[in-house]
Image (cartoon, rainbow, N blue to C red; front, side):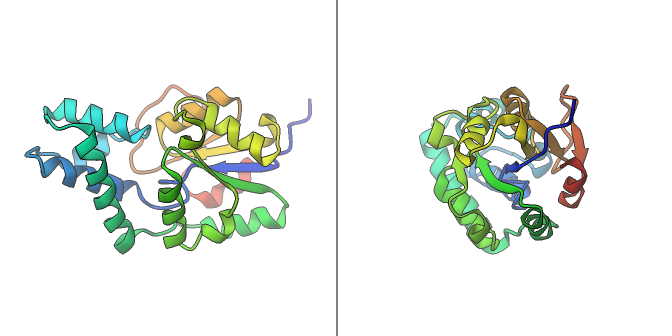
Length: 215
């Protein structure tokens, strides 16, 4: 059987299009340490696995024994993260060259992120990527379903007009990778901030420049 031709690449955002995972961990440390915790960057990185922000905050506060509501933690986290994005956020190495390559091959692409749309757009705007993804941004808030559930990946493929077997999904976190696999899409693991173990048998790349070999 002929291998299906990849016609659309679906990118996660944080840690895949923009180099933000360390900044996310830094914001997490700041918000919890404001409330008397002792969360180090090493600890934050070691527990980083992606997913819905409310779940990340809930697990972290349970682990640290912090008695503060998510309603207080989440806006503070987003405020701190926005400040870090403003001063330090950069695009992932090789992303502009990869997008140019995809354009030359007439391969479409989009972004599917657990974050709210305004956060995705701001991250892309700050890194110069927004023009490439105009009209091709899909948020879990659109589907009311967050990775590792497969709905967002499937929704993105449908809205781009492609069958699942014509798409490739790229993510750097275990929960994101699980979403791609559960959606039935060819899924590639971009090795990122940590290499948390997972049982998924996936192609792994260390740089976006290697993605050409997966298409």
